Length: 499
Image (cartoon, rainbow, N blue to C red):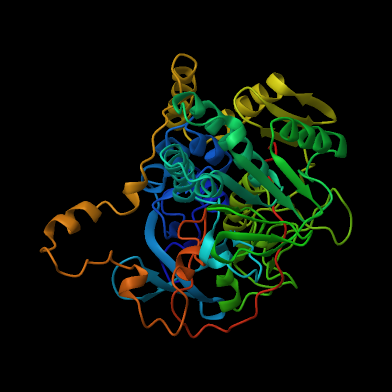
């Protein structure tokens, strides 16, 4: 650190760990004790457990995100991506959302870029699939479901109707189960406004490679969830893998084939690829090796936590690490911030130790499942516990009030059944009006039509493979002189647990 200057703390990522750590440091640092900079591509933190409800129309999308600049008004927030880190030189390479890349020097590093979607080399996945890690993805899926219902209700072609009304979700963890349950519940409710459609016209398919869904809860509660979704007409294809998704034609390893226009990928996450472009020690899964004190193993003045970190789980014995869950991330952030403060003040630091409390999941309006401290709840009580818990955990009093207001209004009014898909390209109608008759149509900026020479990449690949808005993610858009490593294998998702 510079002589006479307070140490500069760099927080890489503004997700659960990044935001909560910076917020706690902001509140507890003494005047002039240290400065804090947070680098995050998005201007907000996404409370991901609320994404299914936002997709189903139960919550206003703006209410499931927390604006970083408003919450972290005592920190410097940089809207951009960290593309590499050379901790030996205490420098991070920054690519701002706009403007020239630059270097950022720091004294203390908090590496918490989070995770991205774990994908597999399935033909057609990059072109046809969409993830479920961001507000943009959740609202896009909602819009698409309603648009497909509009298309089916306006068509007399049975093949077109069947394809439009087939919705496939791949991955039976918390994200996939809650997403398909909430959206099916919304679509079933929307059928009341489509005289041409009935719930039986829709086909909802969940594909899970393992032998059960919701591995975070007990087998009995997982089986209950499976039976409840099957009772609602959702096809639960367990011990099944997807072989191909080319042009929306779904081919399963069971031999079954069918067409679908909506394919949602929720089959887990992996450590952020930024970590491969740092000089920090990584494990065989591409995560930062950490100690129980949340320090980077063997590296001075470097800390880490969350999905990107292999933190020893002291409650489960030697060699076990904590899972990538919100429960661990929020609690680790508290310990991490306190340890940084203690280290600055030459005080003892504490290890992270938290016994898993349980999990809750919503299965649609007034439906849920919960497994908390061995107590198993189903239906309305589990749904109420799910909402109560997450209301208590969503950051800031402002967001709590807004979420509660949304839920209160939903008791008296139906969900809004409207697609706002045009938001994805708001200038489409204006371009059409401004194009002279007979002139070639003007393609949308960044569309495949404007990118004919992307090194032979198929159209649509960038859209499907890049998680444009991941919670706490920090992109890797340019090369930097930091040492490169190869990212490890993917890890499994952590679900929606209790903190």
